[in-house]
Amino acid sequence: MSNSTKDLDHLIEMMAKLPGLGPRSARRAVLHMIKKRALLMVPLADSLQHVAATARECLNCGNIGTSDVCDICTTEKRANGEICVVEDVADLWAMERSGVFKGRYHVLGGTLSALDAIGPEELRIPKLMDRVVGEQISEVILALNATIDGQTTAHYIAGELDRRGVTVTSLAQGVPIGGELDYLDDGTISAALKARKAI
Amino acid sequence: MSNSTKDLDHLIEMMAKLPGLGPRSARRAVLHMIKKRALLMVPLADSLQHVAATARECLNCGNIGTSDVCDICTTEKRANGEICVVEDVADLWAMERSGVFKGRYHVLGGTLSALDAIGPEELRIPKLMDRVVGEQISEVILALNATIDGQTTAHYIAGELDRRGVTVTSLAQGVPIGGELDYLDDGTISAALKARKAI
Ligand SMILES: [Zn+2]
Ligand SMILES: [Zn+2]
Image (cartoon, rainbow over all chains, first blue to last red; front, top):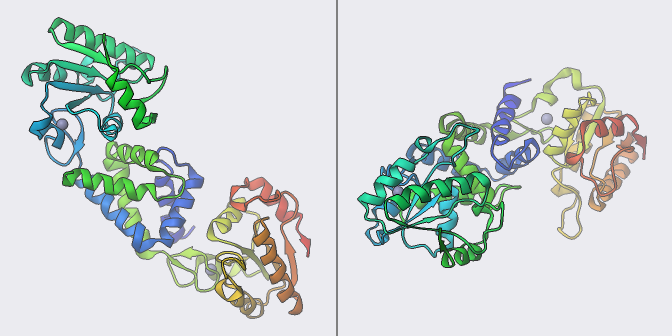
């Protein structure tokens, strides 16, 4: 195999590692990009490089941004006493797209899992407890996935916050059993947030 | 919207333009890459840049490589008097994966289409006629998709080659009606090539 074929194969292999792409769609994507070299391939390479060099986790909430503390955490207007707890950044983005939540977020980075030995310390749970005091939070909205691990995690966090006298609510109406937040449409998320109930 | 969010949104937008990816899978892919920054995102950016700078169409057959004439066209062993005609590079790659064809290729770059005003001159058909003489070709194997446009194109090329006294065959057994080559497994392609018949 020549170098040129190797380079293409290497690129296809890496593209095939992306979630949602397999070898076949990776080959299609690479051929498509070669056809749209100036308009797509070169700008995409530049953008990947730029984001790889600048993206980082917010030290406060775990959101992805380009500074130590993210835009949502530094916008004073969003300090309304509410924190919405999500499992990962994709869920935060889904909430933001719905445009209905005006407070701040806290990204756990996963769920508690006995099987995978993921306890509170492996997630951002201690940091959440710090924030509840430091940011004078009155309500924590748990927007975790309606999976077993998600609900176990919600139950644990609700218990910890209850002890600290914080109101804990959770997304309710509209989140289907076993459903993952990031798959839901914006309207469903809006409805679930508006109809949130105390745990 | 801040610059950091704009950069991420821009990257997601470009990823969503790739075939097989939509906005949702593009978001997933970007978050995945940020998590695998050193192992995936940076090498992928480098590889995209490298391939964007070096990939070009073979002047002889239309294959993608990194030199004016591709490896298959410069490998003397593959000058066995056979040319396999395909619609696009993805089909050439599919044929190569099957490993059963030992000759050279000719990538048309599409099919004849009255609707889209694509005539022989818009494809690499004149170049194919040149090659048949220049490379002393005895057999041209038409490996076009079993679509209406594919078969119209096959018929046209067969007529032109017939006049020049070249044997024309086509993939037969195993290519389903309406099926596209790049979707078939290697075994099907092997069987179709072995059972090729004169047009
Ligand atoms: Zn933040
Ligand atoms: Zn070539």
